[in-house]
Length: 145
Image (cartoon, rainbow, N blue to C red):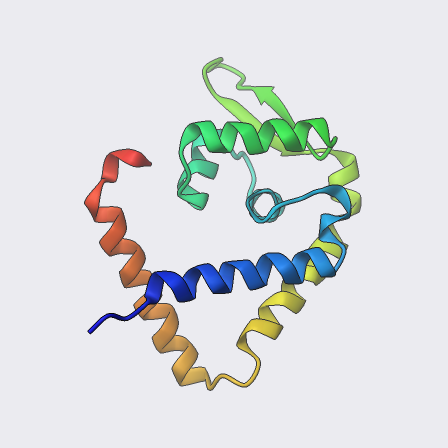
């Protein structure tokens, strides 16, 4: 039996992207990875690029490109680590901090829209199964991240 899980995941991702585009987050040309990075930075301190690689489960080159784009947009900046010059901290700019509430509201609205009409028990099961799927794929090649 073929489940078409990958197809359904792509459809969900496409719908999320469309929702965000239609609800003004694309005004600044932000994609979902960039939104995920901004959201993570808003909720975590002392973030280095490696933290973002782990959070997004993307390769270093992809994260570097997303951060470069956010730097160009004036939303984040890179800071060298104090005693460890190899560490590159990624921090929000004042401009990003000013838009924090708007972004948080948009992401909260998206979360509400996605789970609308889904029973709590079903949602908990889905999140559990989704986590197991991620673990299954992650265990295939732990060296990617």
